[in-house]
Image (cartoon, rainbow over all chains, first blue to last red; front, side, top):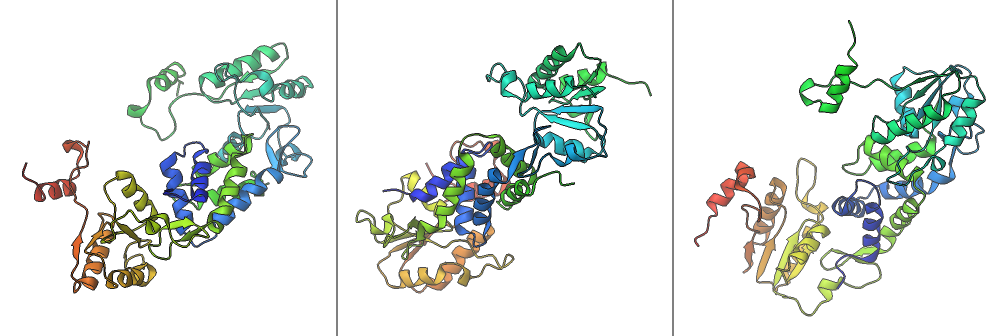
Length: 201
Length: 201
């Protein structure tokens, strides 16, 4: 005797494949949609179907953009610094950097970070395209804004080694205490970085 | 300048409509699907589309079942106690009760609990159908297994008041310490219930 109809189980399984969604959450979402009389499920199905057909990667910076465009809005813009390039791991990082309101240069989205353990090598990322862009010249600074993690650091070092011969300034985002955070909750590594990077005031 | 393409934002919005999924989680899921090369997104879209067309509610107990059947497997089964009925709030509750392996009677799914604050009245639930089933006779016990919450308790009291004149035994699931739990983490209300319901051994 099947306790759960096949189509219900199929949706639970499909939700479970998403990151951070376990079987319990997947069931909760499924039963919510079963009970719900709004079009939340239909809207989700439609948005999922359109996702890949209506988006593309910018051929210059590899950020996501609407399909059919030649380049993304940032690459297309005339109002940005053309001599700074900021290398990030994912399109989400572009969004948060833009929202910070502190960066006005160009971007390059790698779509990941180097990780020999997970088998992610330079050829799995948009590395070749980055090197081509930088070698073409024009940039005076490259901000490697990969995550402050082992993988992000390794990726930054790899990029510097590959481009070291060029007359370009390499930089990483500062590390230290998050603004609004409390000293007592800072982890030892962050505190160590905050100490060694302490600044006169 | 739109930072996020329309179709990406549409999927973030659609995920955000699900319970327990905020804008950050919705973005994370969306960017996961954008980057992901498997068919996780397509599988989810398909399962969502099929969900409502391939399921129906059992006309007897209102549990979910595969569309096209006359009654659900439990109502259809000959091997179950026909004199006990267990009233639950949702189809999920049927599944967990079945998994406990301790109940062999029939079910009735209300699809919610009474909540005047949220505007959920008896006519919004499968109450009328429950009363009709019980009044037809045949049941000697009704286990009102609504949640151990204010709404669940109110729903149980309402059911008892409506059916009190019938020669039927009313019961609620026992409350006390969860098996495997620790006294020191029990909340005061649960502890109070565990004390007042203490049993000789």
